Image (cartoon, rainbow, N blue to C red; front, side, top):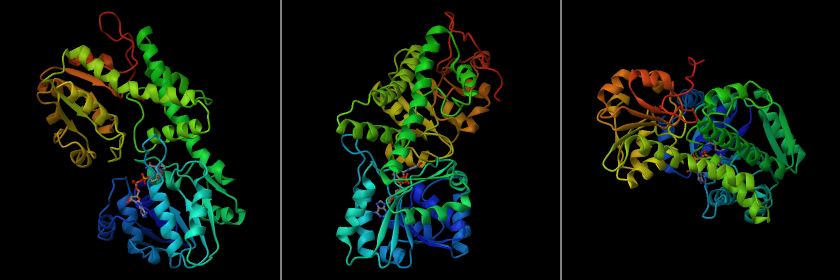
Length: 446
Ligand SMILES: NC(=O)c1ccc[n+]([C@@H]2O[C@H](COP(=O)([O-])OP(=O)(O)OC[C@H]3O[C@@H](n4cnc5c(N)ncnc54)[C@H](O)[C@@H]3O)[C@@H](O)[C@H]2O)c1
């Protein structure tokens, strides 16, 4: 049993705190957001993540997991402190480190004994050294401490599963004893542990996210070519994905990547490169292709409907991916803005993303379910591939729509079946013949 403090109770911090407490450690999770901590102390989750509420409740009841806003309380007995605060995009595409700085200063002022400071936030290469400098200069008295980088690779929507079954743990430090202690903390997770220096660990995180974003933009580029040549990108990616050198993950053509990580992390990596005089052309192309996806879907809708002025468009899905309530950088919101600029009225339904969207874009009208959403819509745009959208009663949807148009930004439907039901249907990267019919229908879902 180790004494651990976790700074930040967002998607990463709360999962880290819950996960380490579930492994038998005593964890105090801290946030500067008083409302969040008050809610957590009443058992209210600030985010939706499958299984999180149960895991938090179990460990709170077992007196292994605590929540506070007080740094002295969190650090009183801590041997390890994880920094898991946000690192949003700055004005020029760089990572904004104000929350990391503030966490480092607060740690320095509150620490009372030797401490291993573990950085889980995604931070630019060199930040570990910078955090060490901040703590050294802000400490009240010289207390030994070490900084270890331990980047986080969890996916929202399956964050607890990923915490408990990581593909690898990456640790970087100049202090090999500290890295070894952090490795011990992760041993119960039985994943390969890569121990390297601070800067390399920080780079592994950016390189991993940039690579995954590149796969998505790659398959979207292939989708564009498929459309011109009459091929079906769904079949192309499944044919490619069986090759272990390629792999099937992140090869789904569609609306492109969104969320709180890929967009800002690719930008931040490009910014780091540019600052050093490098021209990150591949990263630039990845970002350009991704941005084009939204415009493409709007064009596709216009091709089917004509002018969008005064048309009612329903967004099926709001979150940037299924099984989360996170709408940060969700393609749906950018689409909504672009459609509204063209005079369209926007309605939406999402199983988890509506409360946050209402706060950010109150002008979007929310529906109670997919069928209510479809009522009197001129077109439906599939923005998120929630499982519950895959087996809707499409005949019922068609019946209530003003105009039976579906533009499927996630390729969740079979074009042939959709035209049988009577829809004007367009997916992404699925070749169509001159008669507007798909040249290739996809097989039953596997
Ligand atoms: N969300 C993901 O899927 C994911 C995955 C891997 C890595 N990351 C990285 O992890 C980091 C955290 O991401 P997130 O999505 O959990 O962020 P988040 O915005 O959900 O949560 C951050 C939390 O930190 C708190 N905070 C800010 N400043 C603080 C301070 N000085 N002291 C204490 N608390 C403070 C905020 O109130 C907030 O609750 C980011 O660097 C992100 O890039 C995120």
